[in-house]
Image (tube, rainbow, N blue to C red; front, side, top):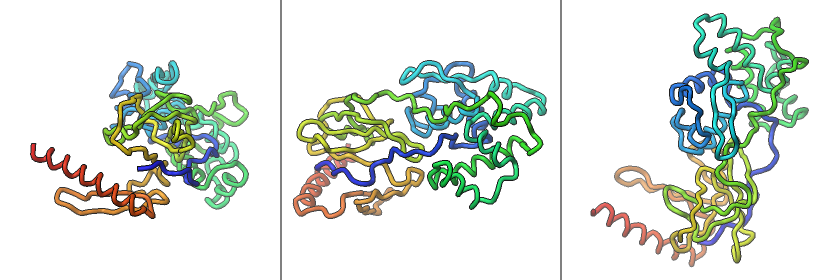
Length: 322
């Protein structure tokens, strides 16, 4: 199968101002699971998803970890693939405190550690304007995307309510020195960097006959992707792979397996069809079989697809038979 040509679905570099994508109450729940999993030990960044039932190097796990750091609940040691995360003193105090008043006062401070939450607390306070007014401010004046603006309002409201902040609370303001440093914007502890050669492991199967070079690290809706470029005769064939599916392997993949997969239009949805593709679902005994394929396959392409399906079915029949 040939590489897909560059298209307009590639992830955009434009990004909203950084803010934790989960609210403070959700961060506290994730903190408790983090401590139950790792205790006093530093958690390797690539393994932190264990605390939340996620795979190694999961983009969502990295984002949760970044949110915990934004709220001042974890700190980083090292960087890149050697990054480790440990609980902060504030996190330990919250988890160990017996007096409810101690926890409540600490929550008020933690709620305003992220730079954007502190910024808009200074503008809106506890009784913020109606959604349409706030959304216009975020999108038109502060460069938020539409989706990010809606998410931010939910994070803001849930955090303010959970921390019990009121307009009378003067614990932090924009004039204070405890200003967030956009830590929630930190890229995940990636195993590979720009310039490295990687292959793509999807579903336990190596997808490319030869590795591709990473040309950038992109983000879309909170998920991270390696943008890769083909080499030699495939130069200029651009595609994206999820960072957690990149491997350092040059073994030959199945013949003709050269396809790229651009990131989904909405990673939060389970049922996504990428623009320029079609989906066919075949209900069989034991569950549905789903196939996604490019629109407008040629006659030759259909014949090749049939050959691959024949090979696949023969292998699966042998597996079932054994």
